[in-house]
Image 1 (cartoon, rainbow, N blue to C red):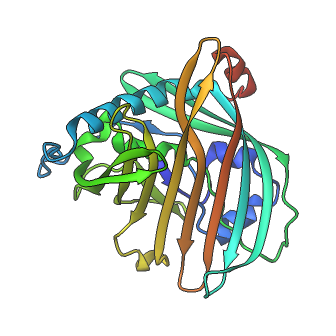
Image 2 (cartoon, rainbow, N blue to C red):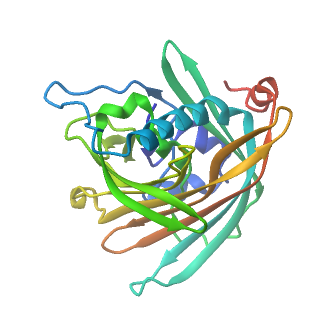
Length: 288
C-alpha cells in the first residue's frame, strides 16, 4: 500500500469533476493511489529503535492504527474541501469550496493491505478555469507511519508531553530511515518518487489514540520543482452504534504545497460519519 502524491489516480480520477484532469496536470496533486502495502527494510538499515520512546504509548498507538485500517472501510462521511491559492504574504487570494460523499475501503489479502478511496461529488465548486489548483485526497493513510508493517522504516524519538485541552499527550517525533520503504510517494508526470516523511505524533498515552499528526518532506525537491510539502491531520473520537464502539477517525486535514512560483493549501473537513455494512460499501463501488 502506498500513499501517493500524484498527478492522477485511477480511482480518484473517477470521482472528481470533469475539469479535474486539466487541473491535475497543471498542479502537483496530492492523492492516494490504490496499491499494496509490503514494507521492506534495506539490508544496511537496522530496525527502528524504540527503547527510548514511551513504549507503552507507541505500542498502543500501533494497535489502534491496525484497528483503524481494519475497520475504517465500513465508514462513510461528508467531506468538505476548501482549495486555496496563497500569495507571497501567505494570505489566500483565491478559493474554491466543494462537498463530497466519501468512503475509504481497506482489504487484506495474503498479509498485505490494499486500499482505495471513493469520492462522489455532492456540491461541485464554481471555479475560474484560468486557475490551477491542488487536488488532494487520501491523507487518512498517513497513519501508516505508525503501522507495524512500517515499524522498520522510521526511528521514533520522544519529545516529552504537551497539554492539549484537558489531555496530556505524548509527543513522538518520527524520522525516515535512509533507504527504507516509505508509505508515501510523489507521482509527477507519470513517475513515482518515494517521499522520506518526518514529523510529529501526538498520542494519548492511555489509549494509544493518535490525536494529531504533522508530516513534511525534509529532502530537497528542487529538481522536481517543489520547495515544500507539509500536512497536518487532526483526529477525533466518534461514537458509533450497533455495535457500540468508539473510533478515532480523521476530523480535518491541511495539505500545503509550494513551488518557487505558486503556493497551494487545501483544507479538508470530515463530518456526518456513518458506518455501513461491508456489502453496502462494495455495492457503492462496483469497480472493486
